[in-house]
Every structure is written in structure tokens, then in C-alpha cells.
Image 1 (cartoon, rainbow, N blue to C red):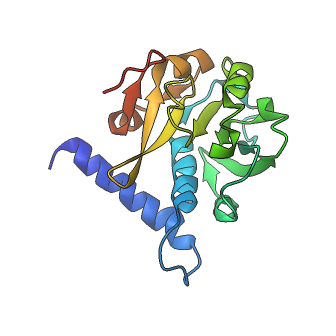
Image 2: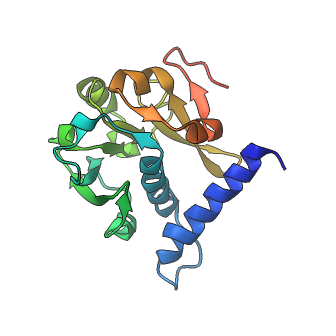
Image 3: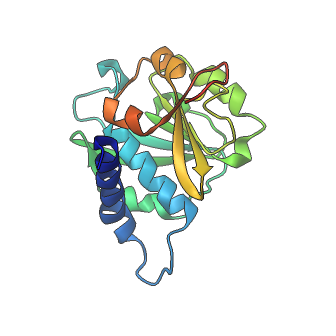
Length: 186
């Protein structure tokens, strides 16, 4: 088995054993946004923010939802979790204000009409932008969640990552579809 497949298997096990098993035992299957919540948490583990992105060494890592919340209660599973010794806190920002205080900002499909304006405001800040809006990464977002062969994968825009001053783990990049703002990918 190749090293990237081994890594993918490890990530899949972590996703399933860490977050997804915390779902309601009566659920017959994991819904789309429970999987995406697990992705958000795991992305945080593979991102290095500049030190000035946090007020103190033990400041929380804020995961924010801009606009409508498609997750329902799925993000409640993150309560009490930590990333790099930082407590994770989830915020819902219905008016998409105050996002400059966040470390990860998720924009759901309902934000299709304004995500470009939000990206323009956040683009140079040390914020990991994530969305399931089609072509999000190609449009200047950092991580776009995409469906490939009935599985959720992710595309990463390296130019947007550099512009935000974030560093992504090579392990994360190996699993990603790499795109540029010109629309290319591999």
C-alpha cells in the first residue's frame, strides 16, 4: 500500500473514531454536515497560524459559521476538544460580522451570493476559509469541500493560503486537490 493511501486510511480512522462516533447512537448514517464538521476540526490540526493570530498562548481556536448554519447540532461535538493545546470554540455569525476574530470561517451554500465579498474582507487575514460552495477554492477561498465519486474531498488554493499567512501541513496537501485562482488543478 502506498504511503498516501496509508495516510488516507489513518485520517479516515481518526475521523470515524474521533468525532463521528460521538454522534447519536440512533442515527442510521452520518449526515453530510457531520462529516464536514469532522473535516473542520481535523483541518485545524494541520494548519499553522502566525503567532499574532492568537491573543495569548492558550487563547481558544475559533471556528465560525458565516451566515446560515447548515450544521445543525453537528458542531456541538467539538465542545471540549482541543487543537494544539487550544480549546476549540464554535461561533455562529448569522450576519457574518466579527469574522476577523475567527481562525476558521465556514461559508455554507446559502452564502453563494456574498462569499466573494466575504473573501475580499478576509483574504489577507490569518483565517482559514472553508466552504462547500462550488469552485470555492478556485474563486479565492483556501479550502473547498467537493464531492468526488460520492465522497467528500477537498481542494486547496495555495495562493490564497500564502496570502492569508497560513502554513498547511504537507500531509494535508498530499490528500488535497491543488488548485490555483486561475482555475487549474491536479
